[in-house]
Every structure is written in C-alpha cells, then in structure tokens.
Image (cartoon, rainbow, N blue to C red; front, side, top):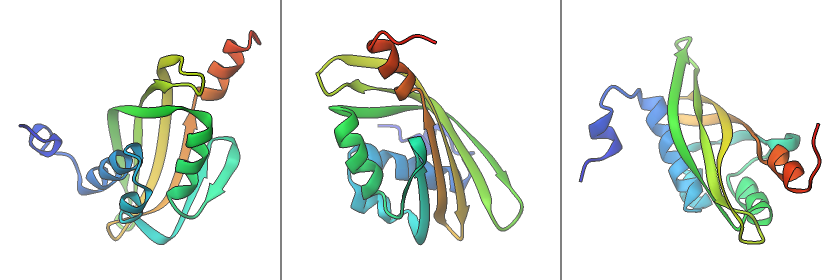
Length: 139
C-alpha cells in the first residue's frame, strides 16, 4: 500500500499536518483532529460560526449532512518563517440529511500553522448554494 507521504514526498510538513487534521475530521474523530491544533485554535466555519475545538464543526456537519467527505485536490503553502499558511482546495461529496447524494461541492480551507500546530482555520464551501438550488431558489 502506498501512503500519501510516499506519493508526495515533497509535501511540506505543514501541509501534512493539515491533511492529517482533515482526514481525522472526516472520520469523524474530533478528538484525534484536536491533536493537530493548538489549545488557542480559532476555527471560523461557513456562515461565520466560530469554534475553539474540532468538535464544533463536527457537530454542525452532523445536522447539515448525513455524511460528508473531502476530495483534497491541492495544498498551497506559503510561509513567512514563523507562520505558515496552507490552503486546501477540493470538493465535498456525501449525502444530504434526506439521503440524497451530492458531489463536486467546491471548498477552500485556509489554515495557519505555527510550531507544528494549526492555530487558525477558515472554511468556505458551496453547500449553501447547493441547498438553495435544491429548494428551487435561483439568483
């Protein structure tokens, strides 16, 4: 079996931390995900919801989706020497609460990593747009 690390040995450590956090979050295992964040983490989720632990987004997603996963397409990394910013870009797939499947729902997650821990996360995705479309509301 080939791991993601073997497939992408050039992946910076901060991107690996973000990837491992996202994989734990998708299980969902918020306690495992918490091992990748600082005690002072600030997670700003869709709609401006602010959480201080990965269990916040997990609880929110439990009401929004029957289940949801991320197809992580790219990780973009920039650093100033102290803080590293990692963007994870891809799509969501899963089931709505009524069991209807979905895929191709775009997302962008922005992380700030310091001293090997995620200190800030900002989340954007198209779920609200897709829900509006399902309800027949078009812009």
